[in-house]
Structure formats: C-alpha cells, structure tokens
Image (cartoon, rainbow, N blue to C red; front, side, top):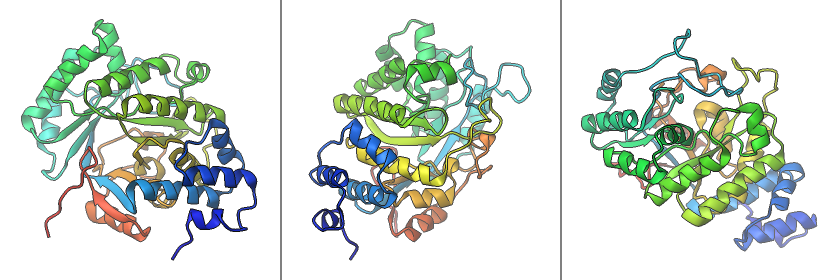
Length: 375
C-alpha cells in the first residue's frame, strides 16, 4: 500500500516545519493562506506537492478521472480585443478571419455524432455581436439537437454584448437560458491583476467584470468554469491573487465546477519573445491550484493545450478531469503552437490514458454526473 500524507506527517521524514504545518492543515481540511501557497510555489519539493494535491483529490473524487464526449464550435475569430498573447483573433476582413452564418452553424450541428453530450462555444468578441445574435445561435442549436448541453460564450463575450445594449447581466442570462443555454465556459479570465491586464489584454473585460458575469450566471442558476492564463509575465503572487479572488467568489456562490490552468503558448503572437514554462512548472501549478482552491470540486488539465502525455502526468498532481474527445473542433491552441494540431481522442484512447495512470476513467455529463454505459 502506498504511504499516505498522514503517514509522512507523523514520522521523522517530514522535518521541515513549514511542510509539516501545511500538511497538517491539509489533513485537517483547513484552508491554506496566500503565504502558504507562495511557499508551495517557491520552495516545496514537487513530490511533497503531489502528495498534498492527491490527498485532496482523493478526498473529493477518489481515483476517478472525468472526461466528456464533446465538441467545440468557434463561430468567429474576428475580435474587438487586441490581446498580446493571442494567436487566434483577427480583424474583420483580414486574411485568416472567419465568420460562420447561422446556416453554417446549423450544418455543423447536424453533423454532430449522437453520443456527443456537450457543445462548447467560444471565439472572438465580434464587433457586431448582440444578445439577440447569441440567443438566435443557441435557439438554432437547441432546435436541431434538443438534448445536447450548450456551454457557450465567455465572460468577455457576454460582458461586451450586455454592456453594448445596456442589458443587466441577470436579464441577459434570463434570455439566454430561455433559449437553451446550459452553462458558460471559463475563458477570458487571463490573469486578474489589472496592471498586467493593461499590458497583455488592454481591451478585454476587467477582472471585476469577469467575476461579476460569473456571479450573475451562478445567481441565474447555471454553473461555470474558471481559468487562469499562466507562464507569461506574471509572478507567483499574481497567480495566488487570481486564485484567491476565485476562491472568494466560490465561497459565495458555489457555482464553479472546475478550475482550468491555461498555459501560455508563444507561437504566432506578439509575446513570442517569452520563453514557455517547463512541464515541471505545469505540474507544480496544478498541484498548488488543487491545494489552494479547496472549494472547487474539480481541477482540469486541458489536454489539447498540454499534450496527451503531459496531461496524463498531471493526474498525479491533483488533476481529476482531462476535458474530452474534442474531435478536431478547436483551433485556439493549435494556432499558438500546441503539439496536437488536430486535437482528437476517442473514448477508448481517453480511457486507456487514464487507466495507464492508475486512475478510474468516468465518462461524465456537463454537471459531472456519470454517463451510464451499457454492458
């Protein structure tokens, strides 16, 4: 039997007093502080971090690792923002820009396999987007596929259309939910520190408004995810501040399902001079997130961003979700230099990846209830 965190805390192996203090907090299910998190980022050994993170993961989800049969829809890459880290967005009418009509979207929905449970919709914040155009998109999808879960529109996209039309967040969500919206994704959070946002995404929704959009979604009865873009010009303190704001909102609403660290990729964007972080840094970041975000049910490793092998390794550092089948339906990370230029895994491949890591694969719906698979 593998030694547990409790085994180490109560032996002479754990001689570092700070390690012992943090481990005792984790064992007692007590919240760690920002100072504790900084120590975990800067000083703690990776093996100790893995032990902390996996203790929490096991208490929350056992050996289960979740995945979903899903597909992405990216209606446009035309965007009003000028984010310096972005390799995806284009200006209207420029080479490489695309805009899907409702008929083109409908055609894509007709092609979705019956076993797909979720459609994830996000893209550029189009200058002509309106609440009505988003409602029409959701209604079109719902009319064709009444059962699929629609996870759509980042907080940045929603804030743009709600503000442009002076529609209160709650009213905007009421209209979208009536049309068939099931949840919203976590994109657009980037890093919450406003000084950094002015440097890397000066045109994007502020951190305060991002949080308010998600708060409104939770109050409207739909859940969401949260992200953090890391590995660029931020510091560990910036990451901790970001996660602390998420933790505080989750204390109030309990509306976040998963936290998804998103790694900065350098190709084809104005920040290409910045060296990308290492795999060891990725694993450390997952583990710290799992320990710090004690009120988040799930930590997700987005395999099209990280790569399949690295995502498998992350399962030993507190991660319990690796997203889904994708079916080569997203360009956001492939355009920024991700290893998988045409991301796709079938159910067998995902289960094999999870099982090889010594974990239990669980196919899920969007709300994390398990799909019942017939024998």
